[in-house]
Amino acid sequence: QGELVESGGGLVQPGGSLRLSCAASRTIYGYYMTWHRQAPGKERELVAGITGGGRTNYLDSVKGRFTISRDNAKNTIYLQMNSVKYEDTAVYYCKSAWGSWGQGTQVTVSS
Image 1 (cartoon, rainbow, N blue to C red):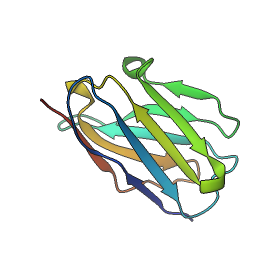
Image 2 (tube, rainbow, N blue to C red):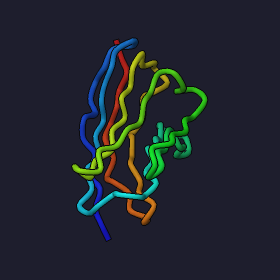
Image 3 (tube, helix red, strand yellow):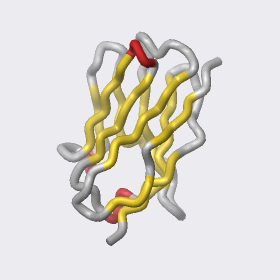
């Protein structure tokens, strides 16, 4: 079906930047791809999505700070996280329109 593997998580200071990657084992061409996150004790939420044509949508709290992008040639999507805040701490997952989820990558915002 196509596996997804996230990378790029880690520890970052408030106001810092981080770029997450999600590599697919099959073509992502034409598929809507999304990033989600789940903080401890909270439900998983949609952070950002990108259509096959490149249109994007974002969670209100990350608009202007996060940017989702895709490279179809590499079968990879990205999440550029700038001006991160403590409340961005979560496990970040990517998801494909064909139903696959990645294993998640931890992002911790801490001074």
